[in-house]
Structure formats: structure tokens, C-alpha cells
Image 1: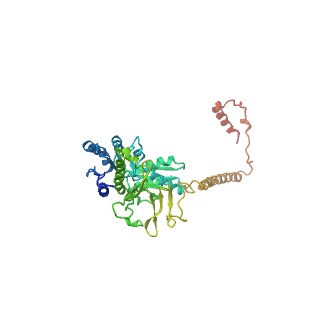
Image 2 (image 1 turned 45 degrees about the vertical axis):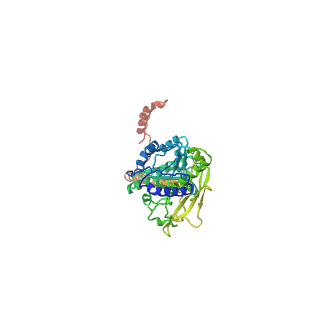
Image 3 (image 1 turned 120 degrees about the vertical axis):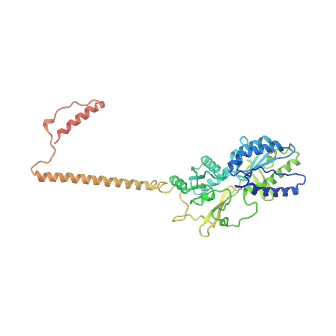
Length: 440
């Protein structure tokens, strides 16, 4: 686990300790212990990822006892594929208290003993696409912050691309990675995005998000980078279970003990596969409420959709995605204050296209171009005609008795043989040059 950045051990450990005290009080026959694996010198997820498997392997080698039941709780900063391999090899129950990928839950690539307690990237992507579908938006640009401490943003971006391509709807998503959050970089990606979409999905830190006017800003939990946490309309509970990763860390202890107790009563071995069998496709009643774990060993979280109220200056819940029903539920008395004249959501494709010269405006642009060309040609013809008329009138003034008509010069008339082949083009040019002298 990270020690003191992102969602870290200092936040999660107290929740797990409280959970152990609670279940230990009601299960005197169990001896529950918690081993925290961390390094205080790590300052990024990359450092945690690089060392997580070796730390766990060292613990397994030095401390594993055949008479014990084991469960691992891993975070988004850890090497999920490497730890899943260890869990699969040792038949240990594996919980994730952060967003889980398809790889993590895949029984062949990840582990058949893995359980995602804090949602999945597939679930998040599904909700984002559901919102786009609701507004009939099919074009969008993803802005991904490349140097964020958490891998949440880049993993979700990848899943959004995959899910959009698998959808029956004609989604067209483009991914742009921001190397930094400077004004120059933000301007560059906005300039590129405006030629492809009017919907921007920001997968960036909150401090970056506030610099850009956006339609979507996806975050794993409520954050206070938008000014203060008080901007959210309802009072925020200040207990240790505020954040989903911390709450799921607490719940992992109760779920582990609940499954192990059932297996003990059935005299079954408490390996990871057997423990998962007691959790998957069931609803567990815990002290925090009911927890539904689906047949694919994942628990998807209901997601709140916030909109900024320009009158009150607060973020207010305008909708919710409920996994029990699988539908979006919109507030009846709260709406997004869309910018513009009529206050409605922007079209997927503007009436004049993303360039401003397509769609219904294309004919106008062509007409304007044709008018400009016609005007130029008319000016040239007028100038040429005026010059010819002026020259003709001047000749009449100077030579009033001349017959001003074209005449053939009979002296230069002579016969040329008919051309038989297109290969005689050079000769043709020669003959044509002779004709120039026939008129005077």
C-alpha cells in the first residue's frame, strides 16, 4: 500500500483495525491479525508497483502457515497482475479496494480468487457512455493527465476506448494525453479537440480540471480541488468511512470473516476458491449495509452525477446511476445550467460541423466562394471587355474607313494531310502554329 499519498495506509489501517476489533468481539474462536506491507520512502504509485510483489513474496516465504486462512487486500498502486498470480498460486482470497480491471478479475490472467470491492473500470466506462447516450452524444475527446500519481485516469481512458468500440452505438472517442497541466498544453489539446468533438471527458486531477470548461470530469471520489469540499450541497460525513476505498477496506475484513466462518462450520478448507464461492453472486449483510457481489466477483458502486449550480455556487447531485436497476435516475428539480441562448445541452455535432464550415453552412460557404470567384471573373471580363472596346473604338477614330472584321489571308492557305494518330501530337502542334498566320 502507499504509505502517505493517494488513498493510503494512514487512512485505511484505522478502518481495518476497527473492523478487526468488531468481528473479534463476536468471534472469540478466531484469531485475526493484519500485516501491513509498505515502505515509507515511496512517493509514487510506480515505486509501490515495482516493489509490491517482492514485499508480498518475502512475507509468504517467512511467515506463511498451513493452518491459517489468508486474504490479501491490494490497492490501485500495486502490481495487480503480479499479486493476482501470487494469490492464484497460493489459493488466497484477493480483495481490491480500488478500481479493478478486466485483467484482475480474469481467472486465467488474474486470479479466480479475486474480488473487486470498489467498482470496476468497465462499470465506470459504462456509466460515462450511458450519460453520453442520454444526451445523444457520440463524439468525445478524452484528456488524460499523463503524470498523475494514480493510474485511475489512464486505465479508465483505455477502458472507455475499448467499451465504446464494443458498443452498438456509433461512439467516436479520441484520446489525448497531457504531458503537463500548463496553459500552453491545455490550449493545444483544446485546439485539437474542438475540430473533433464538443464533449470533453477530463481524466485529470481536480487541480487541472478547474482550469478547463468541461462537460465531464470523472473522479474516483469527491475531492476538494474545486475550491472547498463545502461546495458539495449536502453535509459530508467526516467519519473514517467517507471514501469508498476506506469503506471497502473495512468491509473486506467482515466479508473475509463471514466467508471463513461459513466454511469452518462446513468443515471445508478455507482456500481462496472456496472463500470466493461463499461471496460471489450473493448479498452480504454487513454493519455498513448490504453488499452485493456479482457472479463475476465484482461489486459495482452506485455513482453520483454532480452539476454546478450557478445560482448557489455549489455542486449538486443531479442524477445517480443505480446498479440494482441498471439505469440512470435524474433529479426532477435540478438541472445543469447549460451555457448558450436556449439553455439546452450542446448538440453532438454542431449544425455547421466541428470546423464551422460544414453541414448546413457548407452551401453558404460554397456560395460565398462562388460569389467571390464570379465577382473576380466578372471584374476580369469587365476589364478585358472595356479594354477591347476601348481599343476598337480608338481604331475607328484613327482609321474610320477600315473594315474592322477578321479576314482570311489566301496567300497563306495550303493543304495539310489529316492526322491519323494521337501519337502525332508534336506534328499537330506544328500545324496549329501554322494556322496562326491565316488570320489577320
